[in-house]
Length: 240
Image (tube, rainbow, N blue to C red; front, side, top):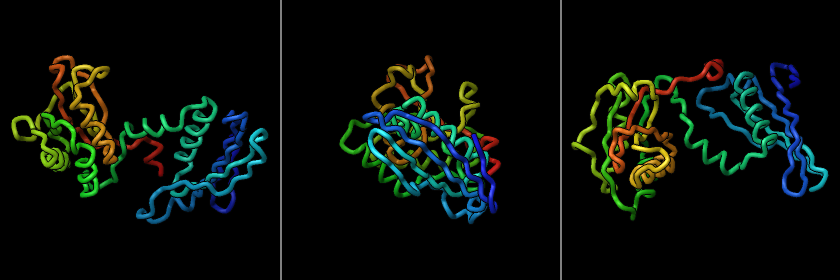
């Protein structure tokens, strides 16, 4: 993949061809500003379509996407992801849905919380649906775990759910010790209980990342919400 260095900017060009609709081929260019990556931390990372040059449905054309606040390493990874989507002709909506299952890296030094907006989104998602019973356990070494768990529990209680034992346990569970972030533990991932499905959908609707994990020792209708340690940034993220 060619790279062009000029005036402190890094240009990553992804030259990929993909058949879209009626033989539409797109050449995709990704421009990443290195200087923007050093901007104020309050400025969120974002990508926008800078320009398009579509010749025709049959001949295709070029699309230029500009991203800010990305390091060269992160830009390379992003370019690889776009290339994979285009070359393998992945379903864009499916990719977006799967992104909800990917752990988000919390900002350093900022405790994980459930915002008022997220609480409302959880209530909206669960409103009018059968209530459930959920056990909640926070890793004892997750400093912000109890408060984060309390935020989720508060929203669930307001939606009519019950918390097992009416408490958030803070104990080490060997089987989950290395699981970071939030996880819903069920008997079988292939056939999770309806309440686990509703809980996962509600958290995803609130943009709270949560994964499903199987534990055959649980009852088939049981569910446990695990609040693990904070997710750790990859080496590429740390280079930003």
